[in-house]
Image 1 (cartoon, helix red, strand yellow):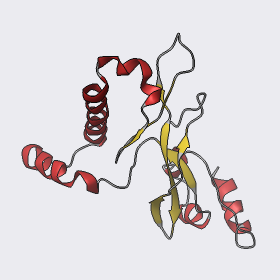
Image 2 (spheres, one colour):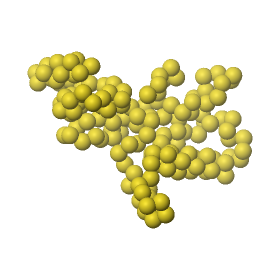
Image 3 (tube, helix red, strand yellow):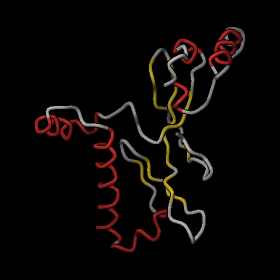
Length: 153
């Protein structure tokens, strides 16, 4: 992957090339971040990993009580509670049998449930799309739903 990204970056000087893949590629130690930036590396991620500003007051309260910055679990828990409690209040307890009817975009998570068949449960396929641009990670406006046979990790 390292050699491939280097060769694509060299070729990208002459052509407009965008490299797409999974988030774990950007975390590899031996991948040159310059190449990812040059190729505007684009990838899906199940969480909004760059913007937690909407949780400013909750983060401040957490920091006062815990004396540390909240982890990923804090943001996940906040959005999961928001999603389920909202629908429990509005739809009643049977809403869990039709989760696919209630897509919802929150600040850290996207809820887009699918159910492969009636013998299985629901899978959340909502994802955010990010790209490297000018040495910064940006959330794109693209909406995407992971295919049922994909695993982002």
